[in-house]
Image 1 (cartoon, helix red, strand yellow):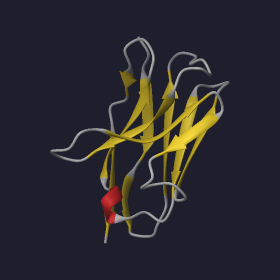
Image 2 (image 1 turned 135 degrees about the vertical axis):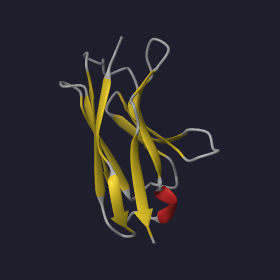
Image 3 (image 1 turned 180 degrees about the vertical axis):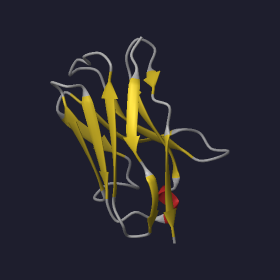
Image 4 (image 1 turned 90 degrees about the vertical axis):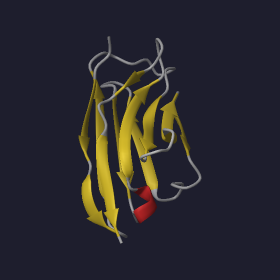
Length: 113
């Protein structure tokens, strides 16, 4: 059972930056996707960014504003979010796509206009 511990999040003004981190309790292999999803009330969870085998993919809505980095040796990921917009407001979840999938507890990001 992999535990994902998230940190970061909070309330910021539009245009500001915020960083999220997620650490896995076990070593996650480089071929296992590890990334962030987000969810707003009444909506499905959507992919924000994912890193696998040193490649990173982003949702179009965050491309050029968010940067996902992954420390493969420590099984930690960081999501640097810049130029935040009110529509980025959501609960952000860390996810490891292995063995059926593991989720973090979620961290709230609120961007005020």
